[in-house]
Length: 314
Image (cartoon, rainbow, N blue to C red):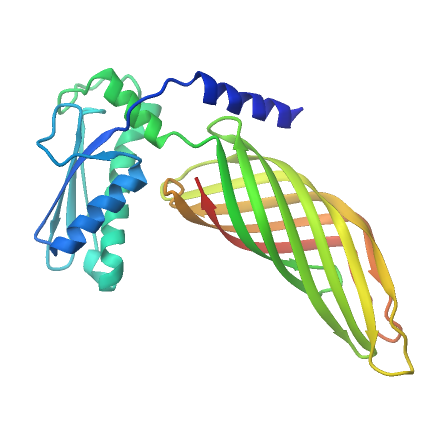
């Protein structure tokens, strides 16, 4: 039912949300290399999902000025969508030259996005604005640019540790459907493989799994932690290969599954592509045990844990 509700909400947003133009940003970069400035402007506009203005900015355009110094770049944003002005510095020249344009662009995008976030957290400010407010359409366009996308997709590399202490490596894909700004439904599909060595032979182990989960996320600056609870279930194959004629190799297979808890950290979640780190654990109520004569069994049941790294797209 939660899945159906999530899909219904997404469909409602897609069909009912008004189509708004992109917010407009005017970015000037002074005292920096010209190629770096152009690339930073281009990347910042992409990250903000905004239209980059070349002409003189009007009262509806967010203005950014980046001034490069000997060790850092000073950023100033004049934002008519919130009526505020914000500033910060970034240690631009601590990074290698090829990375400086992207670093400057992300710093600009983060500062502008932080200003635009006030359209959600403080839509009706009581303090008088420092600059005249932009028209409502421009403010709604900025609000839409920072709104969480209803569906996100990620590719992940994952390590799975069995109760028997055997480590499997693999990966897969994950999708998240956001029910609200805090809650989401997550689905993923993973596959793991390992060749487990024992004194009497080798066991080729393949595990596949699917998982639905319900989670909550709390954005804290450039980090976004989340926690989810779900069920993971799949199928496991174990093929034993004997080392000598004195032993025999057999095949074991079967279903496995049980509850799962996942804690995840996303960095720079507002970026179109951003990294993720996840820690998970669970207990397999169903499982398979590969019996090893004269050695430690391979246990694909009981308590397990995992760690994953991935790249999310939105």
